[in-house]
Image 1: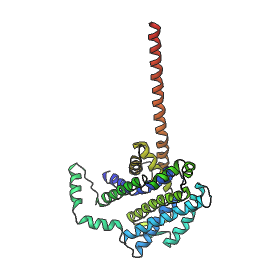
Image 2: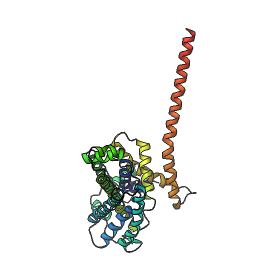
Image 3: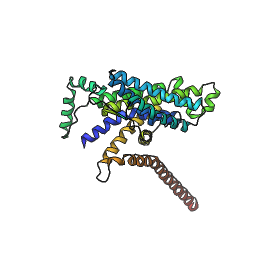
Length: 330
């Protein structure tokens, strides 16, 4: 059980970058961007083919993020310059990326098992520090028999994800970031202040898909392969992470919301991992579990809010009735 949850948290931290990208497009820009299903694979494809051709993993990961930025920017151009519906422009780019990703990889899937990856390098550096023995000893002292092989991926990826979160928080508070947020809230208003909303949309979608592609590259290196179909349903997973995080933590400020998205991605992975341990569920049911999680995350806050409102009205009626009774007795 401990190993399963550990792996779920580990992958959740990596997928949190993708969830941050989805948050930027869906929540900040209010743009239903379906490019995500394609740009996730683009990141994995560019990262994998670069590593296979001898590019250092860190550079391959940067190239993957840049490729995602280009894909997102093209979606923005189709919408703003081509005047294509936001939903349709995302769908068109997603379809185009399927063929582009096949061209990049040259085949439907690409193995990285015998190639140097970012995580292999992290493990190699981490192993020399001896931190694993200390952490595993600490966990073992708490009565846990099953211990993870290495803590390197979890700790390093947590640090990277937090850094990207802080950079995102800072960016959204800059002049460009505030204009980006205003574009999503009220495009006509921000345009009246002479802001170029078309360029803001293009840049916003580029950054969003850059984060998605970065996550795709890291997932490919983490899993040891890139597959042309690995992005199917990724937009739903990203939305599930955003919605679950917002339901659990809230959206009072940008900093809290981005933290909620990260925690939502981790919570999603943990719930799916625990659900798949049930005897009546199979690996193929993961999409069904995702859909149910999103439905619950969407409905639960409304049900809780409705119950609170009903209780408030009931208390108000009781208070009014008691006041009238006191007035009548007087």
